[in-house]
Amino acid sequence: MKRFFAEYRNDYSTYTFSYAAYCVKETREEVPAIYAEGFLPYTGRQDIDADVFYMARSLRVDLARFEDTSENRRVDRLASPLNIVFDVTPKADFDTASPVFTTFCTEYAEERFSGGSMETARLNYILSRDLLTHIFTFRAQEKTLGYVFTVIEGGILHYWYSFFDTATLQTFPLGKWMMWRTLRWAKERGLQYAYLGTCYQLKALYKVRDHKGCEFFDGMGWNDDTKLLKTLCNADSEPPPTADLFKQIDHPIQARYL
Image 1 (cartoon, rainbow, N blue to C red):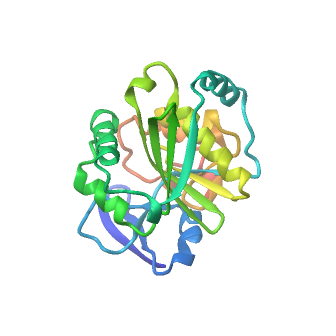
Image 2 (tube, one colour):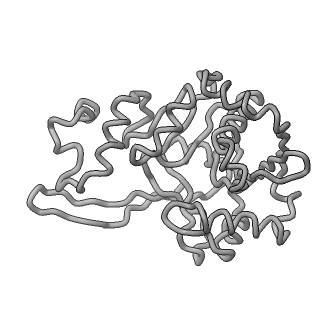
Image 3 (cartoon, helix red, strand yellow):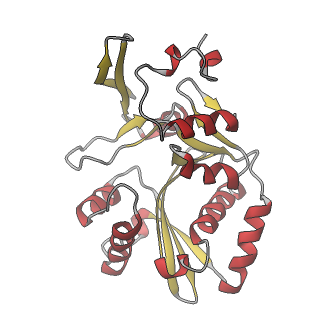
């Protein structure tokens, strides 16, 4: 993989000079290592042909430690009357051009995606990426309830994008069930890790509360200190500090640096 750093903000008063960390995938075999180093795929620019990844406070589940929680079992009991079934289809065998499929995804994104919609052009860009390997389709009585786009490679799964039937969401925690069922599927197949995207702000902590075996990338490695993660997520809602965490001597993560 090729790494690069893009200059961002600076604050001379605290000698803080920030650079965003990226990497470029050069071979498919690198995918598990790229995720293991805290990178996630970047799709914000559709003019980029290469597979570019950005470093972030990402979250993963160590599937060796994953097991059903009381919340998982509660939601599964609620799902029982729906008789939900799902298929896992290699992208090469999935009709990604189906108008029914693309409309389902774009309409859900327009209504529910945080920070903006996913227009058809961006959806097609994501679907065109070789990184995307499998699509999960969830159904109940012939009605499509949702899709999950995943990366499955070398013992890891990335739960990348998910789209839901908004009517079902009004009466049943469909998103919770689909994520749990995907994680369970990954564990049943002997995968090692499942990556769940970024973990910023308190609203993202549901992923940790609902699933055993969670750990987050803290800039140096994977950390299972959920109390520290909550501290970091809580700080995300505050005005940005003038210095990085290394210079914030009283911050609980300080011991990790020295």
